[in-house]
Length: 349
Image (tube, rainbow, N blue to C red; front, side):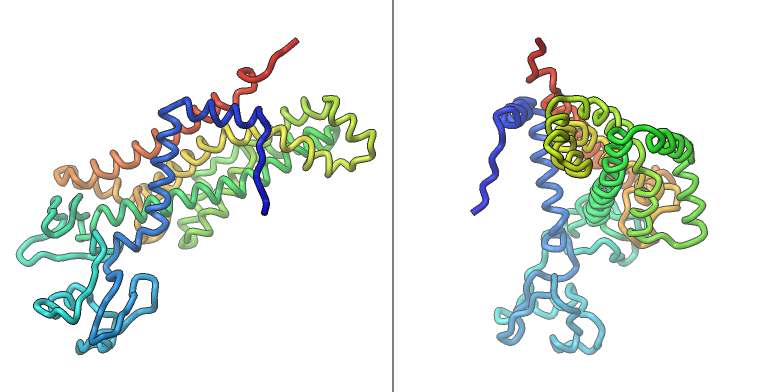
């Protein structure tokens, strides 16, 4: 059995992070939100968690599409489960267990004699109301959060992987390679990323993976400067010289010696990169150059709210939720930066 063992310095950093309460509790809340969003279908969905019909049990949430004819309805398309609930009323042997919010993120709900957007209504289980075409706002917010956070995490992983490798190579090899890469990064960093993505999005219809790819292509370079500077400093230390004298290859020195000692740089900047990814995808969706409709999106909700200020529940729900998430990510970043600050655990002689 593999056991993770941390050195005393790392344990001190973890304890320091826990002492910074706003960052620690923000991390717990963010982990809870991430877990809830990953399994959002279990509590926000138009499909029931379980259906019992004529002695058989069905689990439509993560299963295949079940046609209406399976439950004695007169259409072969996917079952309309709220209609099925009305059919089951007064029956003890047949029943369906619906999620807490029985709407999905793209489903429109109409009320006879009224026009959307509908205000918050606990009886109809529209706890934050609906948008301008009758889609539940809680569902749009939660599924939109899932897209935002996974977009940010994927962009973070891929862009940091490229940036860390290039930065370490620049700092370790130096010379002409370092000079040429610096000029390339200077040119690349002056490219107006948002405008480039807008131009590309106006030519082709972007999907999630296209957006991630574009964000990585134009967003890998900021971390390279930090990794280059740290690598320059670390390669002059005694442990690197000792590794060289023992015959370690440059690749082994970078991967086994230098990178682990530059981890604090990556960790401290990661939360702020996540916040940047969230604001980026939200801004593109707000401008209409992000993910295509009917994809749940915070930016699209902001656009709706800005055009329908009288329907206050649209704009205020997304603003409060987005600001809360960004503030928590910022608190986490500040706490990580303070906890991993080497000056707090290093004695200079």
